[in-house]
Image 1 (cartoon, rainbow, N blue to C red):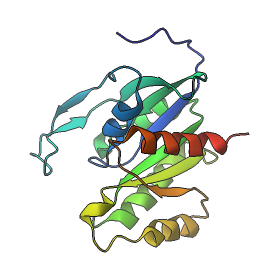
Image 2: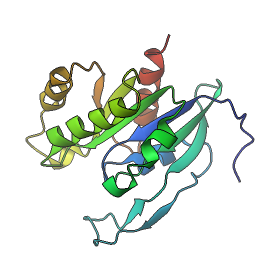
Image 3: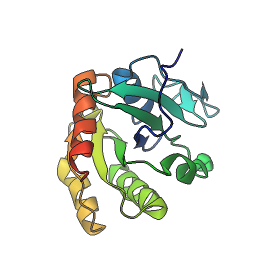
Image 4: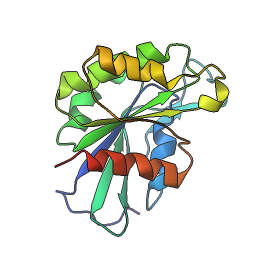
Length: 179
């Protein structure tokens, strides 16, 4: 059962490609298990990943005993792109979760930054890169280069989406951008 949450509670959105770790990150910090719309991958498993989000994930969290934050996770599949403006509407900001082991990391970063900006070009963004331990040649400068090329400023972190403290740090970094 979800806690009672005021309808005007601030909202943060986790965005990014399928398999990056959005659902896992939300679950790692949520006060109760998230409401999830995961279904089996129709194209078959992606490594150990057998499920994918088809509408959105939802949970709430209280950081440091403060106000409740609503957490939403966007589906990463392109045929659910129509959900982006719906879920991003009214969000304080977005945590862009990218898979550091993805050979198309730069393209994924550029695509998702454009997708977020297409909805709200002033949306604060923090970038969190997962699974870097699975890519010995991972270079955080690649992500920073994409952001510079798009004239975007966003803090970039590597993190383990399963780790509550690391995911909380991304949320705090996003909240620090707000005035």
